[in-house]
Image 1: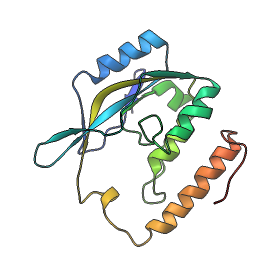
Image 2: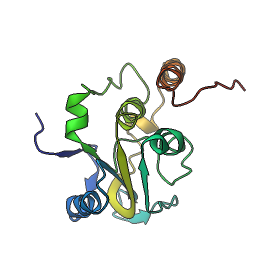
Image 3: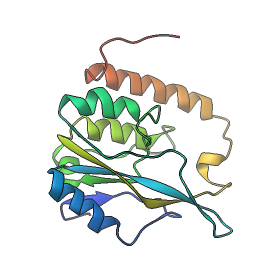
Length: 178
């Protein structure tokens, strides 16, 4: 069981830069944020490290700006980051106070996205820093990169749940069908 003020979620084959905690805590102290989003690099099996092509810009989001700008941008990378729970520092108090948990990846295709939607709809202030502190290991045999027969059904279920969450949370007020 986690204790303290903040928590990171790191995939088992990924890792953080040694300065991650210090840089994130500094961002919290400077901005008063309860959460920090930061950049990532890709680490390859041959030892090569590549910067992410999606560059993150410094920013702070509070109140409605979290719901109106930050959350929607996580689905189109408009601000340089996505819905992964990795490369983010979360307030443990928000997680515990709101009873937030991860859905099983066996029942939903993007448990990170559902968690981030729930979490950031409760956050009050978020700092975004461009520092690439998370190292994402590119594994061709990972769950993300392998085909599963039920993947489309899980994608459909995820989409329905995401749209329901967005509508119920008043993150969006209209649903557009394409």
